[in-house]
Length: 250
Length: 338
Image (cartoon, rainbow over all chains, first blue to last red; front, side):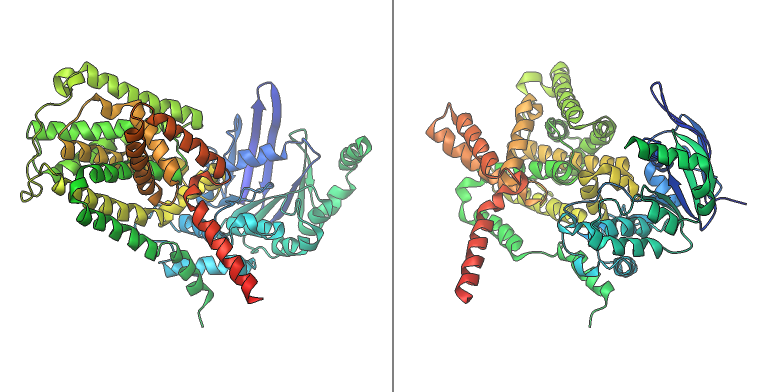
């Protein structure tokens, strides 16, 4: 079977520090897969390797069976591997309309179009409107993003990623820092992601992980500790030890 | 009833719509040409500086590329136009202008790889270095460039074979204004396209831009090359309207003044370069008549004041006063309505 996303023996060193150790992940098409691990387990490094921000020292990354290890960041996105950011990386002075418009333009191959004005292609306008509507952003589409409530910004974060029409979506702590009152909207948006998009959720919040994921990989010190369905992982004594150990240190 | 899609289209196109203030601006420029025939030379100088600053605005205001050596392209355009006229390679000025722009563009493309890498400080040093390099080369190959004397004896053929360049600079002025307008409209079109929007995204956050599928480096190369073409054309206009080309076209002062012009006018809305050029030349004229030796002191003072009052949004300090008036006016109206 062809996995939606697969890593084979991925490694990353920072000088003498071995951060990602021989990591092999297999993520099935349509899966709701979670990658968890205690602080400092190297989750962020793994995301940066998957998206191409960091070059891996060794190992391969396959997207739907095709080797993307050597591709630059934007080529991976166009191939169908998108991500959301944990810390806000939105364009503060662009509006949601422009932000989504950018993603749709690039995805549809019109991003280098320097002669046609924005908003003059009805197919692109349709797609922008559809994405804004799906994430309940139509009423704020002309506000500068920096002035939106944080919850709306987090929704826009997911909306941008979806606007690139990914095959595989990396969700990096989608609900981090969102106030309780706005949390419900984010969780609903995550739960309602299109079923044909494979999702890899990187998360700290165990409630979200266990309500969302159908498969969990546990990363400890850059290596895969265990992998399995949620109930199995929850019972795993090694996992308990890692998390209890972490709790005991707090 | 408009659909959400039509609504999206309407708002996406809104920023690209011509504002009445813009029409007024261009009419005012034409009006100046008609009203002050004795001032053609200085007005031509302002327009040319405006075009040069527009070029810098494309990379600085839109793509966030800082440059301390933009005179490199101005200089190449200037010498190119001068040499073509001097040796009769391309006689028709408009055609020569296009050729000079393209030559500068080739240089822009060739050096863009060095410039787009690295952070602001690297870019400042690399751009500065390239301009100094070219200045030194122009001095070294004085058999071609005329060295410190510059190119001597340039005579321009009539524009389009019809309009002879006159000593009052009338043809030069209208020619410069027409070129500026055409290039401005083109730049305006470009910044409101998906390409232009992607530049703003890159300036905002290059990491994020790549994560929505924008080929960051390719876009920066493209806009840097475009800006080089614009600067080259500004340089060629300089040679064609003054019939001069000397080493100072490459000078560091020219690049530095350009940043001043853009700070005076504001970045990222295209008119900054033009407005800045007008302010800069007026200040220069005023201060140098008042105190010929110390006009730079006053320019420096103005700069410091601008930075102090426009601290939060330096790039748009020009709007500080109008916005203040508008706000006061609105709140007065709201207060009166109660």
